[in-house]
Image 1 (tube, rainbow, N blue to C red):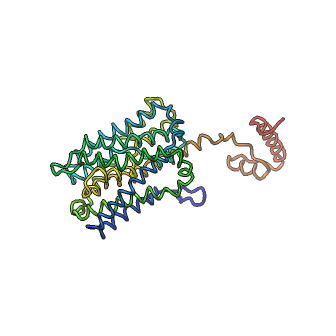
Image 2: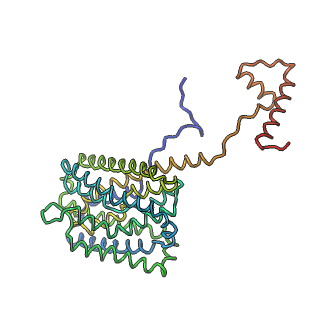
Length: 392
């Protein structure tokens, strides 16, 4: 008879949780699709989004702790490996994804696949998942922070190298204007925030929960502004369910390849378990918080909404997969740390003895039961001494 176990010992199927932030992002896309900002209103949203981006990167610079970076910077080989995944392997995969997907979907969407591959790694989720999985948190802080510091400069350079300019009508970035925008909106605020950290760092560290909405509200504002411009320019006449399916498939393939090569590289390099976890989480993820503002600074307003759509899909997919991996590694770590169970002790008491005897098919006559119980008690005593649970 086959039954379904119930109660505390029952097997529970845990579905991956949807990041609430993704729901807000989808809400902004829907709002922009139904009620897009136009004309002077859109110009106002663009100005507000620019101000939010400046504030966002100022806070990123102020939150960057030099002490945390120095604590993990000794793992230089680990950091170089993570950076090579972020800025070498991913761009190569992005170029392939753009070339293949561009044959069947809108070229700007395909360009978005390449753009997400050029972005830095995440910071908050990489550190949180590393801690959850039992990895080297100090090294994760250093690696993720280093990726973002380098990305402020390197991502625009890679975009300029790999993505065509808009002069031929194919979309892309306007070189000089984009460099100026990156410098004024991203780089200068980031540097200013970090230089002011000795003065405001204590307050920033003590109000992280208060400041977290600034990160997300900045991104939401940029998303609404970007998709409003995209909707006005007819984005949904070019993007359909088939295109979204291709983006999801391309994102899954890129993420799967990176994770597979990442795991193989960690084994080949002989990394300790704690460092291999850092390499995986810091080398396989892309930052939505950094990517959306960068897209706003690098691309024409009418293109931004389409360009960041692949990033939004990849963002949620990476959270699903990496959260599942972190949970599995945490369970393995907890199981390894649990004390090993010793051999079972003999049954205690006549009722337990008779039950066990019945299970193995050995009859115990009434007249033998006192002697069997005495022998079991003696065996139990010696077993506890052998296991260190009792003293002779």
